[in-house]
Image (cartoon, rainbow over all chains, first blue to last red; front, side):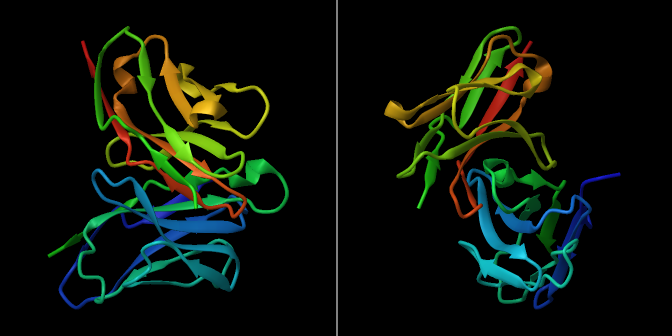
Length: 116
Length: 112
């Protein structure tokens, strides 16, 4: 079944703890993105990666880290330095290369992170 | 950098009535424009997109949008809404760097 799989669906973090959100895709897309969604604020870009072993900070990267060791996977770690991590996190993918259609982003079902 | 404004935070519409959601963008060149829909607790689904050409674009679920360069707008419309159209709708603008900027969203409530 093709698509983007985010896990877990719900995640709880204790004070001082790092947690990792998983994002896996089998669409063979080059680019992957992490967004944070808070009520009334739309989606804000945390990190993105256009190719394996390379990634760039988005608008709100502080307190987060990522890796891109495989094309299929782009895990996001919410570190203890992120003081307000409670939010809905969305992973997205898109193709890259020539053609405007490569700009279309496809989204996973999201992970809701809460602080205990 | 590009940006998007969705002026309406919440719209309530009767089932069977028409719906229009407003979107204004800021970008120096011809933008790539998108509308996405999100049901509660779910990811975003693409409704439609504009890249170039015909300024009236058709999407899924009976939605359409019109690109108006002179007004920097990309409003979403549906002639007759169904209860299943209740959701949050996001307008987004993209550029050559493959990043999207999203508006804050408009929540649509459908009353019977």
